[in-house]
Image (cartoon, rainbow, N blue to C red; front, side, top):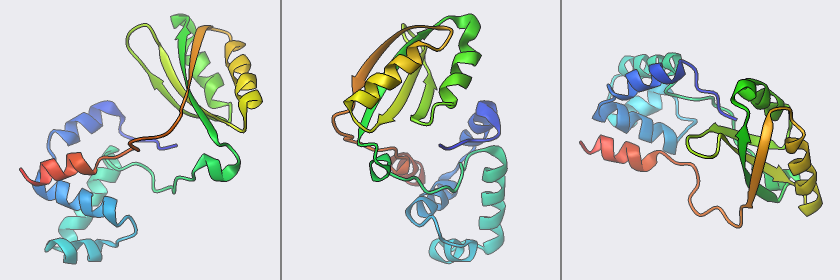
Length: 170
């Protein structure tokens, strides 16, 4: 799971100041995550110091997340994925989130607006395992109601390249 430091205020402050050069650099980095600062500078015609300064600023502010490699849960024996919509007693929200974070099969948790308080992505080994997870989530103190939707197929994965391309072209 990615953790973005600097908080949302820091990200919003930096995001409003990204220019076309920033976007070109981030796009190249997203295409070649193992590229060194020297490689990036050569590919984009920038000085190494410019590239390094921008990378350092983004890392410190949370624009760039962790450098961990994402492993497909299917390769680990978890072929099923589902989204669980959860309604929560608002006084216990932090405790619910902490309990969800303790469940290894919970791979993402999002705070939501509207009828659903949390949207939780879980992975499971099979239907019985998914049923077990649903029961485990329902037993968390503060969880009032859940609704689960099975992922049939991922059609568009996580991406930022189209946004970076738009900014780079401005």
